[in-house]
Length: 124
Image 1 (cartoon, rainbow, N blue to C red):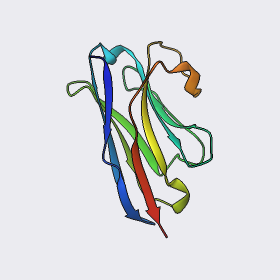
Image 2 (image 1 turned 120 degrees about the vertical axis):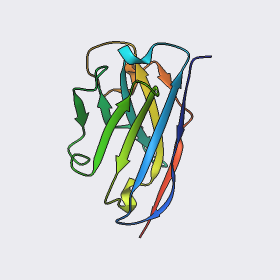
Image 3 (image 1 turned 90 degrees about the horizontal axis):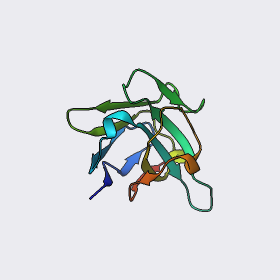
């Protein structure tokens, strides 16, 4: 079964940190771009970060650069999102996604496989 399973979300105080994990299975994700998106209540799903197949290229939205770090471990078939200095406005459901292409994209429509999401809540 081809799937992505996120974990690591939870409740944290402002200024705290969380590390999200995305375990991939069922196909060769090592050749795919992996991304993290998030969706807050009443808002559209937005791009957070992505990482190339090799892990050598990473992309962030401007507001996340410096606070969030995306990485991947091919041996574990897992992608991570380290989030530091969290703010209440980071509260959202965070989704892991896979894109079976080599070209970068920050559009949700360009990712063909999604996890179920993990809730991140940051209290003030």
